[in-house]
Amino acid sequence: MMKIALATLGLTLAGCSETMDLGNTNPVTTPDPGVTPDPATAPSPQRGATGTGPGTSDCGHVQESCAAAPAGHVIPYSSEAELMALLVGDWLRCSGTGYPGGVGLSISADHTWNSLTATDDGACVPVTTGFTGYGTWTISQGNPLQFNLLKVGGGGAGYFPMISDTERLLLDFGGAPMEYVRASLP
Figure (tube, one colour):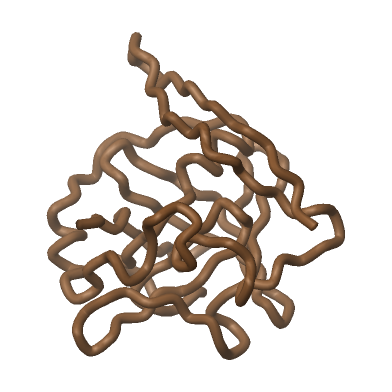
């Protein structure tokens, strides 16, 4: 069973006098302690929970998407809710070869994730089979917060994410950084 919480976030960027309203009034689900959501059946963007997600992004033009997004400035965050609001969505891999593989990564608000792979026609589709291309995610408290991708079969990796105001994401677990750009939706 999933608990549902409403989250309305208003974040202030460092050095800015305006507030960025992310407008997240949709239910945000968090798993009950000790219960692991089943990525095959849990709601997620690729299964229509938000109307966006894999299959709507163009994975055939990853490098062009990466080149079009400037580096930008790192957005500071200090809470799980702030980090979650920044991470949730589809990301195309620009560089790096660390875990997880694929052309991108889909991070869902229901605490599930999927690697993205490209079809022959260039559409992004989630990995939903095998041992390492999908699972659940958590955020560990600390300074800085740690983002953990857990494989469905056990194990995984932890990262200290950096997200820019130009929709770039850097995941580095020490020595093998991976850079992503938020997937553009039609």
